[in-house]
Image (tube, rainbow, N blue to C red; front, side, top):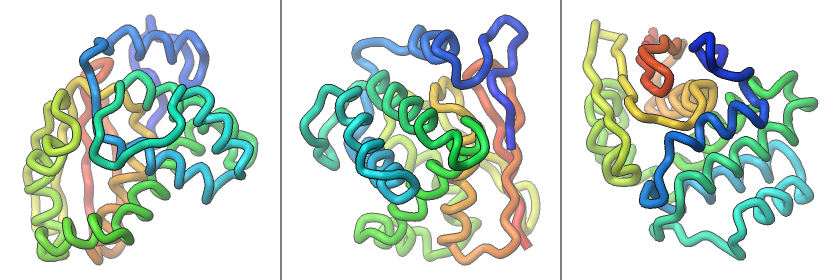
Length: 205
C-alpha cells in the first residue's frame, strides 16, 4: 500500500493541510459524475454506519446524488477524506481506510447493472479491462489523463495524471476491478511520478 503524499514539501496524508493541498489543484469547473459520489456513500454505509453516511452528506451540501449528473470534484475529495477519517480507527489508519473504501466502491459497482454491462463490454477479461481503462475513465472523469498498456501476459501498467484522489483509494479500486474480471492473485503497486501523477503496476496469476 502506498504512502501519501510523496513530496517532501507536502503535509502528512489525511491531515487538513494535506486535504487543502489537494484541493488547491482543483478548479471550480472540475467535475465528475454522481456515480463516484454514490460509490463513496455505499462504501461508507457498508464499511461504517449510518452516522458516517449522514456526516458525509452534510459535508457535500447535497440532499442526494444522481448517477450521471456532474458534481464538483472538490466535493468528492472532501467526502472521501471525511469518510476515511471516520473509518480510520476501524481499519487501522487513514491509508488503510482509503484502500478499503476504494475496494468496496469498485466491488459494489461491478455488482450493479451498469458495472456488469461494463464488464461484459470488456469480455470479462483482465487484458481488455486494462487496455480499455483510458476510454472508461474519460466517460466519467473528463479532466483526468489516463494511459494503459500490457507489459506481459499477466501484467500491465496504468498511468493517472492530474488525479487528486489518493493512491490508496485507487489501489483498492483496481484490486476489486481485476478481481471482478476473474483475475486471480491480483497485486497492485503504486509508484509516484509526481505529486498527482501515478503509475499503477497490476499483476495477476
